Figure 1: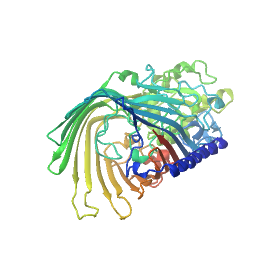
Figure 2 (figure 1 turned 30 degrees about the vertical axis):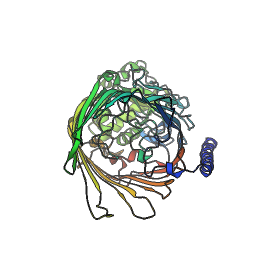
Figure 3 (figure 1 turned 120 degrees about the horizontal axis):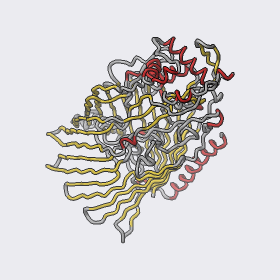
Figure 4 (figure 1 turned 135 degrees about the vertical axis):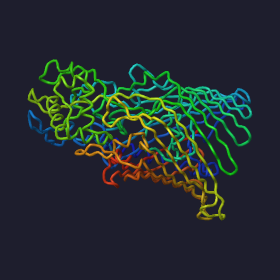
Length: 633
């Protein structure tokens, strides 16, 4: 494995050396933008006899993580190889969860990507816009092998790691213009006809929609879900969500009137947020869970909305309304449907099939692991056990009863884990996998915003400072209950963001520095839509949540160098509950064809004490050096 890792790094360094040689003979700094964020729109080729313009890039994306392994995958489980005492009414024993050795996740990411953008103009008003994206992951990781622990877990993505398949029962291709295998993805994130005549613009087809003016936090940017499969939230920050929004088939129309006013509306096929699969490098749902995605029931649903944007004097104003199915989804216990007996108890599999559990060594093996991972998943371990008992009658037939306190819950859980591991047959290893389903609920979003550009002393921080405020109100938003009960939570939620941004020149010999400072508040959930009532749990204390809402700060800067070949970037995300994600970066663009970004992701979720109270705790292991090398055409 290590030889593959260093071979991969050598390939990256060799490519940079070759690029330096290209730079020496083909240096044209005037083709490099001073502060462009996107790297996919430069360079084009067109034929004088054709109305089609084509551009694109090929890229290698590599990340090395030096901070440890993800606790949410089988090979990173924090109980692997650890002797854990189990005490129940029937026995006391010690269990060591397999695999006994954690995997090597130093190589955290290796993607090879190609994109081709084209625009075909049929006449001055009508065009066809298309983007083809192809991504390949060779799987050069220390992958989890289910056979090594004798796993028979049900579900096509719970065997060997599957990096790209979005698994939905009853729907072969949830995104109609996406084709995936375990190691590749080909899709058309853009394929639409555009009619543009004067002030009117109409787009029909597969497209992404970006609303709002907040830069890193999403407030009014509600039309599309996000795709976390490629590099989770750890991508190159200046690109924000340009590679993350999930495209959808739809229609979008806009009309510009009275100079500075715009009305914009859309109707599109509902497409959910896509999470990384189990045992892939950036999976965030603990791999002891099997997820049944119910998107098949929503494949024909339509989202729609409109916004109005304009200026009143010196103040920019906007308002939006959206009726959508929340793409993040909500989760609850569901029947496993797996008829696999508890060792030594013939016929018990029929009862387990109508509970949320399946006997398999990739499940949970002790009460300690159960409560620890419930807290890490922002769930209530005690409440979750009781709902698995009270909401499923077959659990009672197996002898489970609602636990009045944590001590009783631990004793009951250890008893079931002992039996599932083979206590009656003289064995101890093994476990129970939990089964949850993902559902989607409709909501109405009402939002607005104001923006204002200040006038101060020329050259001062208050001169040409852009202030932007956005707010969103969602009545009766549906959330996952921290106990995974059948009844979801419903409550009103407010989301708000204020952003300060400007270009500031600090040195006469350097171009202006782009600066951003941003504050976000959400009344009921965190940045990823998880209900804050499930926060603050520990292995020995069920989640209590916290008051005052979710609050976070983001800071960023971009500093181009005088020749525009180099640019330094810096981004910081701080959750006021005590977690920080920092990303310093350098971008090198020696000419119009080649560019490289090198950035480092540092995550620390322990600044406030309990990492299960902030959004960074789940990626606390990240100390990641990333290298992206691109050639544009």
